Length: 386
Image (cartoon, rainbow, N blue to C red; front, top):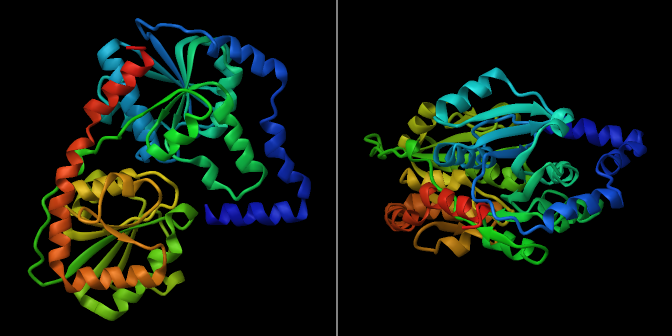
C-alpha cells in the first residue's frame, strides 16, 4: 500500500488533472438529493426486516475490525429475524473470503452483487459503511430506511482540504447513524439522529498468558506502515531502541501488516509476523505476550486494543479523544504519541512488572461492558424502531 500511495503521488505530480477524478466520481446533482430525501424524510416503522442492502468497499481483509462489525450485524439479523443480507461492492470478492464468512458466521444469509447491478434489488434497510459508499446509498432509493455505519472519524484520514470536506458532506445526507464512539456521536449528531454502540470482543482470542521461565518479556506491536493513523514510525523507533537496550530479555512481535525488517534495521529480537489470517497463530502470539503496543490517532477504540486487553495483555496506547473516555490510568498505560515517551513508558513497565499485572487485572473488570450480545441487540432495536 505504501508503494501504491507513492506511485499515486508521483502520478498526481506529472498529471495534475488526475487529482480531480475523485471529485468528478462523487459529484451529485440536486435530483440525487431530492430523490433520496423522499426516503429519508419518511418515518417508517419496520416491524420486520426481511432484507438489508449493505454498500461496502472492496474487502481485502475479512478479519479487519470494520468488516467484522458488518458481518456480525448481518449474522445477528439472519439468525434472529431471518434477514437476507445483500453486500454491494464495485470490487471483486474472493471465494476464499466467502468460505471464511460461511464458516465463521454460522447462520448468516447473504449474497454479493456488483454495484452496477444494484438498481435491480430492493431492501427494507440499506446501510453504507464507508464515506465513499455513502454516495452509492444516496443514489439508491429502493429501500424503506437508510443508515450510515460510522466506525471512525474518516475525515481524519485526510489533511484539511477538499477531500476532508467531501467526507464531511456525507454526514449531511440524512441517513440515520450507527456510530461506535462518543466523539463520532457528537459529530454526527449535529447533522442527523444516531445511536452509539460499544463494540464487543472476540472471545475466541482469549488466552491465559504463560510466565516465561527464561525471564524473557514478549511484546506485541500493532504496526501498519501504510496506515498513518497507527503511528508506525513512533512505535517502530521506540521498540527498536528498547530491543537494542534490553537485548535478549525482550522480544517484539510486529503484527498488522507485512514489512521487511531489514528496511528498518531491526535487531534479531524483533520479529515481523505481518498480517496474520490464522486466528490460532494470533492466539499463539498473544499467549506469549505480557505487553501490547497499539496506537491510533483517530478518536476511536480499535478491536485490536480490546483483543489485547481481553487476552490479559498490558496495553500501552496514546490518548486519542476516545479511549481515555473508556479506560483510566489504572486500566491501560497511556503514552504521549512521541518516540521518547514510548521509550520511557516501555522502560518503566519492564523495570516494574507490577504495573503490567495490576493494569491487566483492572482492565478485565472494565471489559465486561464490551458485549457483542448487547451491542447487536441495541443496533437491531434501533434499526427496527423498538
